[in-house]
Length: 213
Image 1: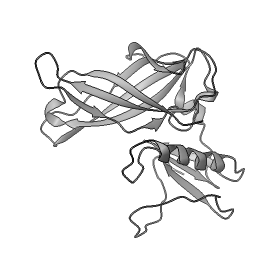
Image 2 (image 1 turned 120 degrees about the vertical axis):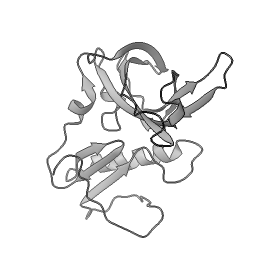
Image 3 (image 1 turned 60 degrees about the vertical axis):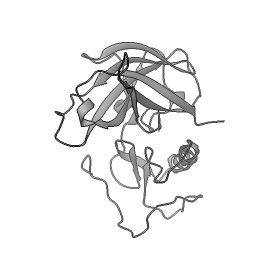
C-alpha cells in the first residue's frame, strides 16, 4: 500500500462509534487518536480508544500498516509498519532546539523542532507543527497523553493561548512502556493560531493526563 493512502468507507452517519469486542471478520481498523469527533471535557474518550487499540494489536491477523497525524490504520493485508523506526531516534536530529522540559512521570522533552510557518494573511489561521523529542529517566509502564500550549503576548500586551488536542505520546504507536533510556521519541503537535500571530514569538508549555489506571 502506498504511504499516505488510507482506504475508507463513506457513510452518512454524523459520528462513528467503536464497540467492543472487535468482530473476528473485520478486515481493517482506522483509529483517530487526535479527534474525539465530539466535544469532550476530558480524555476519557482517548482512554477508551486506547483500550480498543490494545485489543486490535492483540489480534494476530491485524497489523499496523500506516500512520499519519494521529490516524492509525490496521489491516489484514499490506506491509507491516516498523513503528519503532518511525518514532525512535538514537541521537537528537540536527537543527533541533535543545530543551529540558519535564512532563512528569520521569519523562522530559529534550528537544523541539518547529516547521517554518506560512506567511501571515494568506488564510485566517496558520497551522504550526511542533515536534518534540522526549526521553525517559528510567523505564516505566506509564501511559500518558499530552497537549502543547502556545502563549503569545505578555509584558503589557494581551496574553493569548492556543493549544493542540491531547494525544498519546509515542505517536500512539510506540507506547512509553517500550521507551529506553538514552533514546529519543518524536511526537508532532498541530496548533492553529490566527494568521496575524504567525510571525510573533511565543512560549511553549505542556499539559499531560494519564491514560492508564
